[in-house]
Length: 380
Image (cartoon, rainbow, N blue to C red; front, top):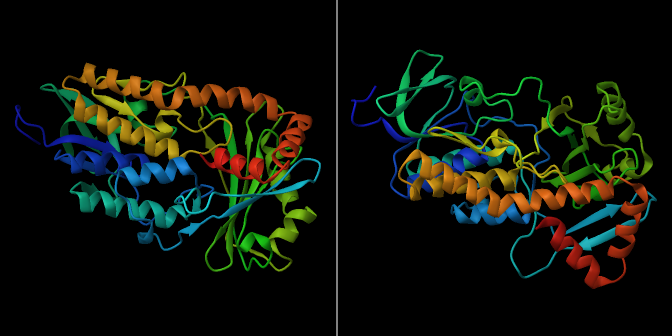
């Protein structure tokens, strides 16, 4: 424990996922003393589609991250989309203008981001589980289940949808299950087009959600689906849908007849309500899933997680008092994510209807210009 006048760290970050490590990297690069704590030991797996959009790639560039440090990194050059009517549209990504999409397992990506933050100067404490947060001598006191504690001027909660930090502060909403739900399984021995191409299937029973197959090195793919959570979509419906998807002819063809599911499938809820989520409290900023930053149209969360982590670091670096930091952060979220969220809500309602989903893809398939620019818009 520190003295009454000087905290142990300028900032403590709870959670070492993409949002937490992005914030840690920037703060450490700015000369701040930073400690990142996580109950896991890296590398560790995380339920995810593993897709990286243009937003995620640009945010990674901002923290100086080098993709070559990720063993499973695979750049995507084009995508194959299938409408509810069965129409298939191939959309190329712009060439010669940098990467617009990539796939990397979270096992590899998150471990590489932890190393990146450590190399920037952040202290990383793995296998360290958060217990609670209190206030003392104008600092936050962060205690852990092993009986230790540290003090900090600022705290960033990057600890997921059911944030233990939020719970410790009495701000956790009981019974919240997120706006989306997703299933994922790694598939081996992929011999169809999914070995090299990114697939998105807009299945009628999933709209406005979709099924995906994202290629990975070694003839592997990340296969899964995501749907909006509604009262009609019970756990039984989601489990039955998962089993049925792998039997559909167009999906079996893409994966290849001899594909081999690896281990068991995993499922996870996805929070997507950045417009109403509590963003901060006292000396604490919430980022990533802890601030429900996932895109409500696509279910994408890595880019938004990185964006909120960077915004939190910049707000802490710019502001003086906790009030200033909270104000800077809230304005940054409004500027970068709120408009996109509202547009996604509108588009999601439109694409929930098969007719409009078919119409959109028919328009996309008009010519090379519409195909290329739709791909660019989709991944940006």
